[in-house]
Amino acid sequence: MSSLTPDPVRGAGFAAGRTAAAAARLVADVARASSDSWADAIGVVAQANAFADRLEVLAEADADVFAAALVALATPSAELEPHMQRAAALPLEIAEASSDVASLAALVAERCDGLVRADAAGAAALAAGAAAAAAHLVRANLTVKPDDPRLRTALRAADDARYAASRALEAGI
Amino acid sequence: MASEEELVARCLAGEQDAWNDLVRSYSRYVFAICSQGYRLQGADAEDAFQDVFVRVYGRLGTLRNPEALRPWIAQLTRRVCLDRIAAGKREEPSDAEPAGIEITVDELDEAFAVREALEELPEECREVLDRFFCRDESYRTIGEELGIPSGTIASRISRCLGRLRQRLEA
Image (cartoon, rainbow over all chains, first blue to last red; front, side):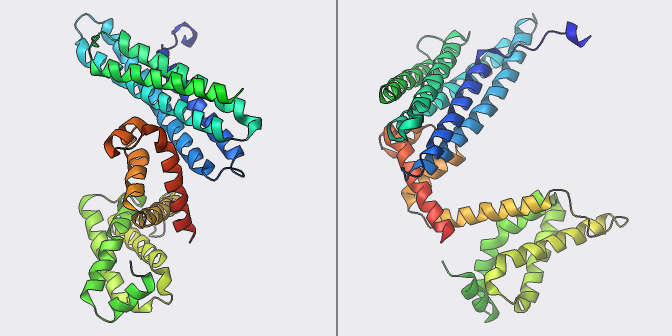
């Protein structure tokens, strides 16, 4: 019977969170590999792992909230507003944390051992993609209007992430 | 901050301020072992907490190595918690520790050591580490709140972590 039950839809917020978490783990690995020649590397490892932990939790929470929102949307009598508010809040947090991962990855790309620089640049690009996806989810949310401060924050996070990724990719050449 | 050895000596000399310092320094630690390690709740946790400090007061003179004050208090606390659990469930042996208690006490020890080391750091380091690791604030928020460029936050956190590490290893 289980094969007849559709898999739960987890959505792009979950994927963005997991992607940024994976990028953060990669940043930690690259920084750790550079710790012989870079005094601040261990502190960067700690920050990157903190981001990864945070984003993994956010991704799971987003999947739960998204599933609940889908149920509410399919239920005529359901009150949608609280579900939609929650469904906007989590992608916003994911966008901001992803942006910070991209920023940290750019720092690592500029300071790390040359052998692993391209990996740091790749992590920045992944995190920037996650930030852009999460920001788009905030924009697509039914409760978010064009002048909503949440949307401004999300788009700014995505812009910051894109800029950080371009820095990292330049450093990685 | 006085060393543990000085604190113990002052307590044994009968200085009330020293006892107050000791209770203040260890109250959260003891309560955390009672509530998180042994899952004592409400009145049970409060009674265990009181018992621990009564025993500390009565037995501090038997502590052979004053620098081992923390593990000694941890051991006393564990004994008190086990006694309380045994009193509540007479059929169970009193030495049956909850699964994972070693990990919990070790984690608490580590957390309290970090907290003490944090208190020795300059205010700007304490603030930035607290905002990042405890409040999960973004680099931008930290930068805006502290009036420093957000692009420098990651490096600042790393430097502060380095100083924290030096304190912990000292």
